[in-house]
Image (cartoon, rainbow, N blue to C red):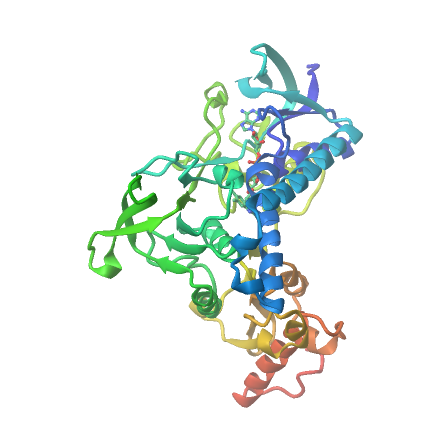
Length: 483
Ligand SMILES: Cc1cc2nc3c(=O)[nH]c(=O)nc-3n(C[C@H](O)[C@H](O)[C@H](O)COP(=O)(O)OP(=O)(O)OC[C@H]3O[C@@H](n4cnc5c(N)ncnc54)[C@H](O)[C@@H]3O)c2cc1C
């Protein structure tokens, strides 16, 4: 049957963008549909990854300058810098990234339809435009990559003024003196360090007994040190009872109990509350009932390893299919969906993907933690390097944190890398390469690496690890020989 397009992509976040680009490189006709009136790029460019990281970078620059050269007249950053300038910086980056996406789509002859897409059947999408008109398009394949949206808080409402969420925090008109973040995930801890760098007194209220429980235990200890140094107050096991504005005292009041404090009622005075709860897949109004597409009990679209849904012509990728809900992974998922639709052989997403948390300083990890390796009954050893022992860290004044290698004691095979420190998100890729080529920790000893760099930590951690193995009396002839 002759259809309008080879593929229709609903949503222009990283999953949609990469699927459209890859399809166009296969000489396929592609249409992307985007419901945002002004911008392409989804949460990736407009409310998530790019703006939050642009703000983080600006805050880190301010913090670094203050740490190195002192704070002029003992002024806090919020007395010297204006939120408007930070937001302007973020906005310029956001516009730049948007232009790049738009230009790439134009250059690759991908058509764009503006409006809300909805399935009429498994090959047909109706688009309701912002002018109230509808257009209908057909395609051999359709990719759903409509992303995710924040869940609403249970005991209070976001007003976009005193009580903020993912979007309204990006419109804040001033640097707050006090900020209370309600949330337990990665973004809560990231925003906590971003605002703390601006001099804001930050409290994080988490309903869990432990935050970021997936981290290696030593990295978590390092994170706690970082939070303590920054006076970020992290309260766990919290149940929020309400958030109200006290006009007499001109403060927002958060009422809560915590099992750690005997469940007594507490009231916290703060300037703003930032709610960063969980996220839910964007499937509302998509017309999935007109298809065979299945969703699970969390409302995530169910896909197989090829990113195909229960319908042969419908694929899904990115946040809408659930974990890991990252831009990094969404790029790969969208590209692989395109390869699978058109029968082009492609590698699967590797099991070991790197994770980064953009706190100040950053956290990154890949592979097994020490505890996970032990739970699998592997005989593992670890090697550690503290950044306070790295020359580059002294030069850049970034001595917080450590790099930890987890490896098999007998073979020295690298199983995991865990870093807390400056540029960790970037540094993790060296460990990722060694793991994916099934290398062992001798790589970091036998290869010359640039000096001074933060990557020197790999060499020091490798020496630390093999020295420990040697001292433990494990039999080997010469650790520098080939296996
Ligand atoms: C604060 C924050 C910080 C983050 N930081 C990072 C980070 O540092 N690193 C990282 O890897 N990830 C990060 N993420 C996660 C990342 O933003 C998401 O995983 C990623 O954007 C998901 O991509 P996607 O393609 O699935 O959807 P999205 O980027 O959300 O794009 C979906 C698009 O679909 C459109 N759409 C929805 N429904 C329809 C419809 N019916 N018709 C037409 N269009 C529709 C939306 O308007 C949107 O443009 C962060 C997220 C948040 C919230």
